[in-house]
Length: 323
Image 1 (cartoon, one colour):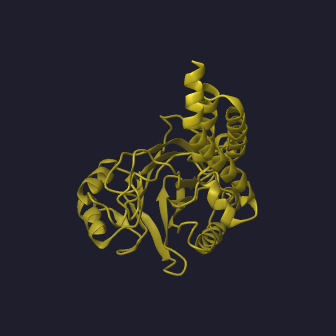
Image 2 (tube, rainbow, N blue to C red; image 1 turned 180 degrees about the vertical axis):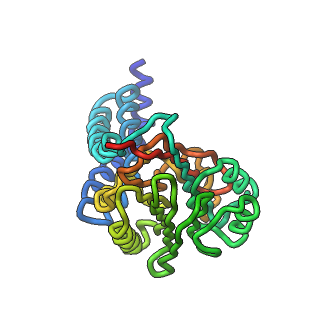
Image 3 (tube, rainbow, N blue to C red; image 1 turned 90 degrees about the vertical axis):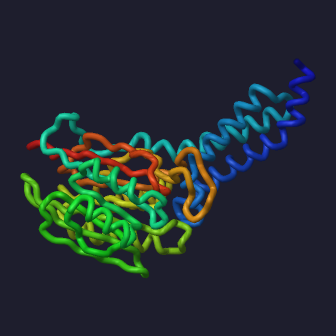
C-alpha cells in the first residue's frame, strides 16, 4: 500500500498540483472582478474552479502522501473557499414571491435563444408550439425561422423581422423594437390580461468578452425598465452573463426586478457556438427571466436539448393576490 501511494504521488502529483493551482489562482483572481470587468470574466466560471479545486483536494487526500498532499490540499481549500464565495450569493438570494402550482391567472413564458445556426428548425418550432406559451421571447431568429413559427402558430409579434422576437397568443396593446448593431437587439411589447396591462422586454446581450458592449446593453435595458411600471414588468433573454459574476449581481440590483431563475444552466446544449466541440452538460447559466413583484413564480425550468446551442427556459408566473 505504501509503495502504491508513493507511485500515485509521483504520477498524479504534478497534474493534480497544476489543477489545484489553476483553480485556486483563477478563483482568487475572480474576486477582483468587483472592480474590474476583465477580472470578472473569471467569475463566470466559478463552478468550474470550485469543482476543480474540490476534486484536486479529494484526490490528494485519498491517493497522495507527503508534502505534495498538503500543498494540494491547501490550494484546493483556497479554491473551494474563493469560488464558493462567488457561488453562495446566488444560492441564498431572494427570487421574489412564489405561488402554488394551481394558482389562478397563470402566465407561461418561454425564453429561448433558438440560434441562427439551428440544425433542427422544424423540430424546434414544433416543440415551441407544443408548449402553448402565452408569450415566447426568442433570440437569434432568422427569416426562415420566423416564417416557420408564424405558419405553425399564427401568434402575434412585435415586428416582422427582428433578431429578438416577442410572440404571443395574448392581445398586444403595442410593440416596440430598439437597439441595433451598435447597442444590441431589444424588443418591447405591452399586453393585457384580466388584471390590466403589463410590459414585456426581450433582449440579447453580447458576450462579456466583447469590450464594453455588454455594459452598454445592460445600461440601456436599465433605462428602459426605469420608465416602465415596475409592479408587473417582465424582462427575459439571453444575457450572456452568469449569476456569480459581479456584473450580473450589480445589474440585478439596478433593474429592481427579482430575477426568477436560480443557477439554471442553459449553455451550451451539446455544441458550442461556432465550433464542433461537444459538451455533455451545460456549464453556464446565461439565460434569465426577471419579473416585477406583482408576479409570483410558479416554476422556472429548463427545456430539452433541441437544435440550438442553448436550452430553452420556461417560466410560469401567477398574479400576486391582494396585499
